[in-house]
Image (tube, rainbow, N blue to C red; front, side):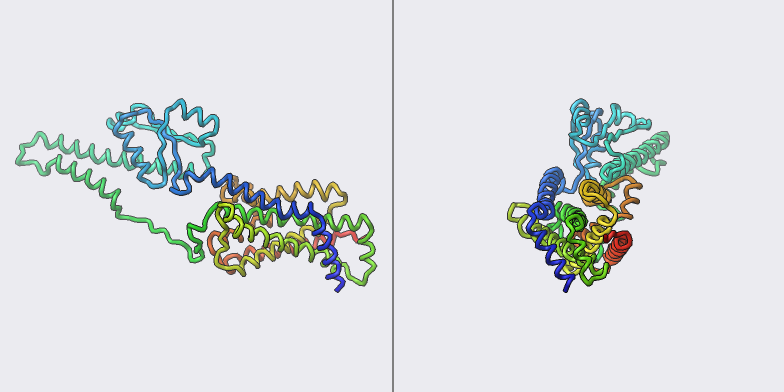
Length: 415
């Protein structure tokens, strides 16, 4: 009962402080709204077609092979070709209005016709991004197909030249017929390829495309980010009670140190659960009223509940650790806030981990609890994953919770 009394007292203090409510409830919703609106607008032009926009500077205007290259890129189904001039493209690239463009050199068609080496240039700000790698491989594939077709046609032309010296009755094949047949096969192979790639969706992937949006990315990230910011409130609550002497009075109660810290952990645990419920409710109900996409909760509400419980436990345990290590108000305030925001960034709450091209950052994220919580949420919300899929992440979060609480209990100054 003493633990519940401590928890009830802290909850009443929390809900009397409008600053805490704004920081931990209103602010994450503002971040979600801004992030979703801005990023949805920035990718809106390509989200409907699922194509990568590629500005192309064709310096071989009118060249047959250059036109064939452009048609080949469009035919891949993943690239939207946007013709432009060299001057405008270079200006847009310098001002970062575009992030990549392709240059087809002069005499491109002529050089291919005579068998000379040709080179197209893909200029990009980030050569390691997924879109640039897709453009590179697609361009490489189209050019290789063109060169292969040209080599076959040249071989047929050489064969025709060899037969031309023979009498017509001794010629084995009609070169014109072979050339026409080859071109027909080129077209047929593109329209009806012998090898087709079948994309199989994992059995956990049950979220429909209509339910998928930027909300599915932003809500899990900012939920985790601000849930862990509650740990700062946990540490601040303990520090304030030490400062005004109420913590010493609690020490006089017939409670063990473990029970006392448990009493401080419980209210903040409930605050995180309340925070998550508000964020998810707002994202599933209120966002649609504002004309935005709603959050799809996947197929397993119980799995979402398990992730939320582990997240709340890990956050409040981290708060106990911060309270045990921090000795001044500045350390609990500014330093811990900076630390928590940095952990949030490295843990993929603001930028998805699969976008980070740095192996070092991806390695660091494996030692940050945020990354496991974000990954588990996204598996459920975007892939429709079940409990077994996220069980390893839940185990890691539980391990972090035990570690944080154990170190906090060991280092905690009860005097």
